[in-house]
Amino acid sequence: MSATLIETQLAHPEGSLLARAEAWLGHLVEVPAAALVAGEVVVLLAGVISRFIFNSPIPWADELASILFLWLANLGAAVALRRGSHMRTTALVSRWRAYLNARFGSALVDHHTYAFVGDGCLQEGIGQEMISLAGHLRLGKLVLLWDDNRITDDGSTELSISENVAERFRVADWHVVEVDGHDLEAVSARWPPRSSTPARR
Image (tube, rainbow, N blue to C red; front, side, top):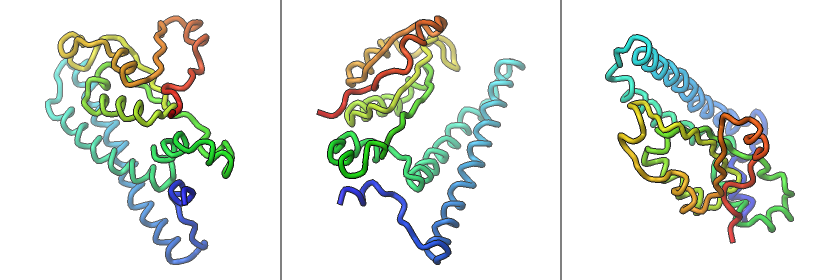
């Protein structure tokens, strides 16, 4: 029963009507997702160039980027689900690791997911939701590399937050390593990181 929960792609005979329909539906989702990525890059690049080179921000760029990101997140979730790269597999494996390893082998979900985040990213409400959910589910293969430069698009982080962000992660049961990002030897000594969150008890 648990195997069917993990397998997200049903095998259809090659050339069958279901296989062709699945391929077409995949393209219907992946092509717009790719276009949204390109559009997001163009809008963000235009906003940065306008703001920092011409010193004349485009008022609608941030709002349009937010809307594009929402659509990209929805389509990206569908693409990840179709390809079997979504969070559910990691959560299931961390919860039933011994059984799944015995039945399917340890390579079932044998990868880490890395995300580079900045101060502005972690100020968003969804950032706190991600911190909390990943800590709760003990997603030990999720690793965030946080650039704590105390700056956002609008200026210093002091304009909008005053809490200890590293402590937010610790409270959510993350393993936090603080290192000077300009010291390559210190970074190399801590790389690769151990699991961000401990295995589920």
